[in-house]
Image (tube, rainbow, N blue to C red):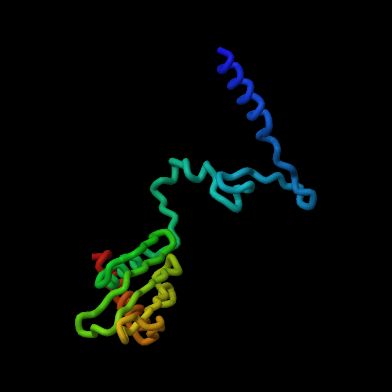
Length: 166
């Protein structure tokens, strides 16, 4: 019984240390910040109301164009994927060795930058290494291959969009 009373007193003391109205007004603007889930100001972070808002569940808030995302996955499917982030728009492949070019391997990183389907909405980086003397060389980029992959992704995204209206 003593343990229960001690536990209750400790919980009472700890819970009295903070209060809901502990936010202080900004002396310059006079605004009182509303607390968020991961931030002291809900305008800068995620609020619990946004997460639990069941009214707008049909609306998906994305910063990534769905056609560019799907096209990027289709085009980069030749290599195993290490990481994909649909909300951030990042796709990273593992090192890939083409059977025709055995002394060279590539790693591709694609960044989808917009929610619109436009030519500057995607950026691709191709990292290349050459196999010499039993080890892989320093990594360098291949701009020509980056441009080819970007163009293939844009063409695939355009085709996906056209086919979605049929």
